[in-house]
Length: 114
Length: 116
View 1 (cartoon, rainbow over the protein chains, first blue to last red):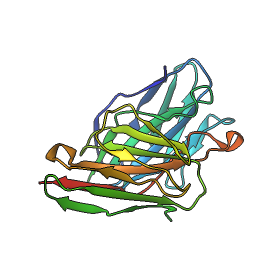
View 2 (view 1 turned 180 degrees about the vertical axis):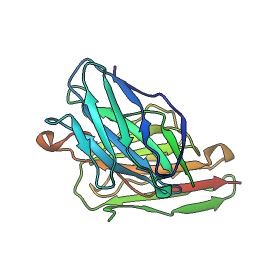
View 3 (view 1 turned 135 degrees about the horizontal axis):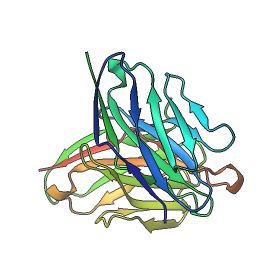
């Protein structure tokens, strides 16, 4: 069975500092990996995804994540955060053999301080 | 730009009332889902549908029911609301065609329900 572990429930960071939100998954098959972002009182929005090909994927607002198959990780990074990045971030995994059922992590709350 | 819509966004009702949360998508997706999310907490899948007239219960037991009479519409109903039903309900959809399916989900903005 697939599972997703987000190692930090909350990550406080100062504005313009770098940040890494950690995500590990367990699966014995090829997977698709996602990061979703949820701003207060809103639904989830796709931030970035890994389907195949290059293991480094990027979003339009400066986030990036690297698929590491040997470490079964998909950590999310940003070199310099803004106040507006304050949100909840969810890591998720799905697979063809799992019927594309999406498994979510418990979420990491990123809090950017001025 | 959202292609999946939920109404109402916010609802405050008394105990015992019947409520229906509406969800519609314009992307032609076969698969639709309802998630329950308490504030600051993880997502729990409560219902899903892989097509018209197909509905299944999710991982978290829920007293709500759903229907899928049209591809684009997936309403959730509570026959008799209780304070324990207070939560945020998120609707989502995904591509159903085998070759295009990756598990990527498209979410509505959510319906926040408060039962007094």
